[in-house]
Length: 114
Ligand code: FES
Image (cartoon, rainbow, N blue to C red; front, side, top):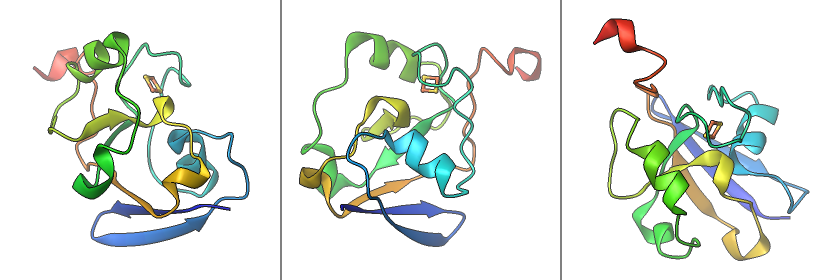
């Protein structure tokens, strides 16, 4: 039962997840954390953008090319940015820390703003 810490709006939310088969996006949504996930994990948006803590980033599997392409569409991209729908929690990730950016936008979905 791995723990994950979500950081959002200066708050930290500790979640003890009982399933090892859920993505970070699903866990966040199941626990009332404000993250959109507009395409429900089909790699067609970037509204599940998360920022992984630097200590944890290299412990994750590398992002696919498709994930990197989608990340290019988000605002506030960082060197440890990932898509929450592409990371499945496991015991190896017990203690994972991720931040939910406050400007979690997909530029394609907000094209009228730019
Ligand atoms: S929910 Fe759309 S790419 Fe993750």
